[in-house]
Amino acid sequence: MPKCPKCGRKFNSLQALRSHFNAVHPNERFVAPRSTSSRNLMLALVIVIIVVGSVVGGLIYVSSKGPISATTETGLLRSPISFALYQNLTGVSFSTLSAVGNGASDVTPPTTISSSPLVNGTKPEILYIGAEFCPYCAAERWSLVVALSKFGNFSNLEYMQSAVDDGNIATLSFLNSNYSSKYVSFVSVENQDRNHATLQVPNGQEEALWQEFNPNSYPFVDIGGQYVLKTSQFTFTDLSNLNWTQIGSQLNNPSSPTAKAIDGAANSLISIICNLTKQNPSSVCSQTYLSTITVAYTMPSSASSPPMIAITASWAGETAPMMKVAKPAF
Image (cartoon, rainbow, N blue to C red):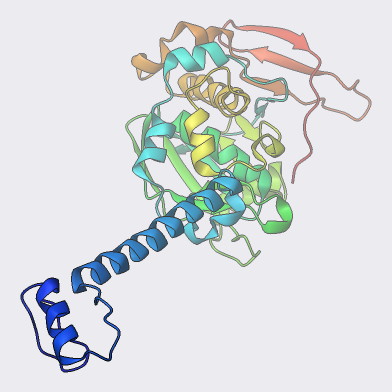
């Protein structure tokens, strides 16, 4: 309802206000007042434009930054991994593993050893000793989880990265995890955190095995007392600048370089575990592709031995010599 700006009287129409203004205020210049609804509409339009502009600007900024890297996600560390990532780790199909085979060219299988069987009760034991700062441990954990998930179930795996000055490699931590299996026992010791502070201490037997086969070096993996890992099976730089989602999403893609590294290393572990469990479960160990997997190499026994490592294809029961150079321990 228009109102006279001079006397404040209200009128039913703008024409009535004009007639009043000319009669009562003849010496004043009449200016039609803006309606309240018009002002409100204009204010609403301004607010909408500001909000939309802010949203669009934010989207442009985020898209210009590209994928989030592992180095920007440190807030996730020590929190449980997502269900989606867990599915990626446990859902690598046998068709993918078969296509990957021995994996990337830099995949080096475990070393055979002569030692007493490592068992936990009636089950063969896999002992892992590592550190969260260690980039070689960061790489190997991915393969361990993929392989062991074929024989049992993990829970409480957590996001982790190697130390900032050791590549910041996206990985998992076994610190608070649990593993259950009818076929094999998995014992993990995360000895230090990513800042080199002590976390878990191996017991006497674990310490003795560690010092015998890989003194104070990470990672150390004893597989049933028959095989050991003294470093990661593939180069940790294969995972540089990848976050957890990027790594996990590639695990079931056999053409991915990431899958060729992680799954190739997992295949050697699966083959070895099948040997230790007497080919159980059959749903895993009867996979025909496993007969083609290189499961271990034997280190030269003396300094005078030539720099050649004999590859043992234990599924076939034969030894096929190949040139293979072991990566240094961390």
